[in-house]
Amino acid sequence: MPSPRLSSLILAPIVSVSLLASCAPAAPEGEGEVETFGAASSALTAQQRLAACDQDPRVIAGLVTREICAGADIFFRETFEGNGRSCGTCHPVGNNFTIDIPFIDALLVDNPLDPLFVFEQDPGLTDLETPELKTLGLIRENIDGFDDLDNKFSMRAVPHTLSLATSITPDPVDGITSPPVHRTGWSGDGAPGTGSLREFLTGAITQHYPTDLGREPGVAFRLPTEQELDLTLAYQMSLGRTNELNLAQVNLADPEANDGRQAFLDPARGRCNVCHSNAGANHLDTGRNRNLDTGTRKAPATGTIGAFDGGFGGSGLASPNIDVLDIGFLNGFGDGTFSTPPLIEAVDTPPFFHTNAFGNDIEGAVAFYVSNFFRDSPAGLELEARFGSPVQFPDTDIIKIGRFLRVLNAAFNLDLARQRLDAAQVLVQQFHDTRADVQRRLMELAEAEIDDALQVLAVGGTPLHPVSTDRLQLAKTEIAAGLSAATWSQRQGRISNAISRVQNARDQFGSNINFQLGKGNLMY
Image 1 (tube, rainbow, N blue to C red):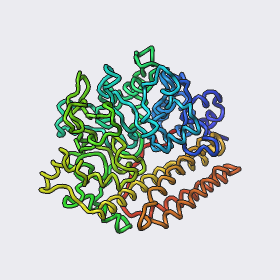
Image 2 (image 1 turned 135 degrees about the vertical axis):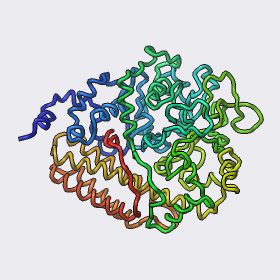
Image 3 (image 1 turned 60 degrees about the vertical axis):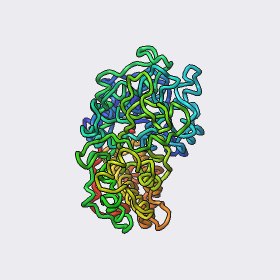
Image 4 (image 1 turned 90 degrees about the vertical axis):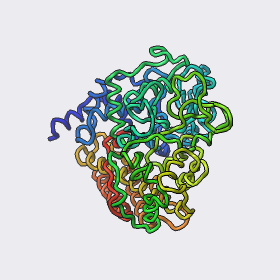
């Protein structure tokens, strides 16, 4: 006889289960990993979401808390009576919580009426975005205020939301006189008028969700409740990894990658570890996130004044106060500094930096640090003063550091895949075919991470871990067979085989690459 909790799951009204958007059915075959989102708000209160999450098999199995479950539902499905967008519109789970040109191109084919493109559908929202969203993957941000919509804006890439728990504590040593509670967003000051990750949602709704550019709360959108803010925060803080590595103890099996690790750490070579301690987002000296002027601001994505991004601290200024590009006149707002992002997650989220202007592979991003942009920047000059010489390393080290970061990223991808496959296995063992859609979607998202790992490992020159690549292809075969399995027991067997293949592939990378993963990775 089923347990009382299992009976409750089986007997729960279908309407309450279908309303829980974070348990949405898997995408139809052939749609790949493009996430699309409807324009209608789910109209659920926070309490209704929590009640629905009590029926979620992941919550019942103890894999996820009801708060994380409900927060994910808000993140992916709540539109706050706005223009149809949700957080998941620009942070889709199947695309590493960011958008890029391949994702946008696929979405234009599969769902050209997606709320991402609402600025083309509603004449009143024409200036919500610019054409650079579709051509460069950049969104329009009024980070310094909404008082001059025509000129006072910036064009920015969409940062992923992985591993926020490790990367948002502000460093008091970066010279910022009024640091925010959390360093969020590219410039580390979050959405307009906010200073914490909890309040970031309010700013994001105001910026991206309005039905008109007057942006009046209660008219162009509704503001989140205190409980919705708490729940969304709980979900966001549970994404990605929750720990830092110790690179001094990591040992990589690929000789070039391991030498890249040493170059990354060595003050006489890469010096990367100073600002990206242990390949994360925090400074070596303090273990906290530091805003820096690295010179990326001098390479704008477009030639419009709105693209002259002054970084942190421009809010409240009536006129430009910084020559962003060093071209002889004031053209931006801010102090020129930007927040340091984590590197472990970066390899499979190109292009890089806030302008998407420095290449589509990690090697191009590494090469930036031997460019004049960086050498002549305040951050570059600070490193020069610290070590007595400019940052300079040969092309061979660019390749080796790239290989090192690729291995770390592939390991992270495979740990996410393993986490989702393990969860699917728990669910199929405990619930058999009840809510099999959740099991299948976790399997599909695991495969998306395997695909990321395969792409990351497919580097030019000497192949990275060809044995692992073969085993990952076998894992994909097992997942495909599990998705089409006729019975739960067959699905269970295929999941088990896929887990073994993924782990065998992961074991080839080296030792002490130990990630602690948040429970939010199981939501979608």
